[in-house]
Length: 125
Image 1 (cartoon, helix red, strand yellow):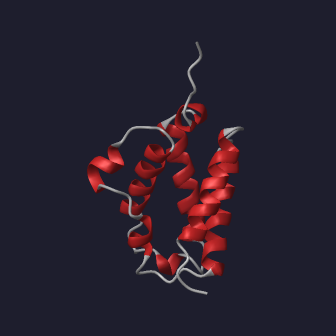
Image 2: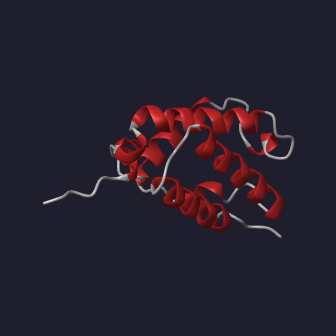
C-alpha cells in the first residue's frame, strides 16, 4: 500500500514555503508596479500568504483557524489588478518557485495553481 504525499510534504514542508514567500516578497518590494498595491508593512501579508499556501498545498490548517475561508477574490477586490499587475505578480511567484528549487511533480502543480489564481484575481483590463 502506498500513500500519496502532499505538495507540502514533497517540497519539504514549512521551511520551503517560508523561503518561497520571502523570495516572492523581496521581489515585490522592488517592483514599481506591484509595491504600491501592498501595504507599507509587508509583514502581515507575508505571514498570511505563508500560512495560506502551506494549507492550500496540504500542510497545517492554521490559515483557516486564523482567517477563516480564504475568500481570495473578496480580499483582493479593493486593489486594481489588471493584466500587467497579474503578469508581474505571477512572474515573481514563478521565479520564487524556481529559486527555492521546487521539483516535479510539485513544481508543475504549483505553477498551474498560481497561473489560474493570478488570472482569477484580475478585476480590471
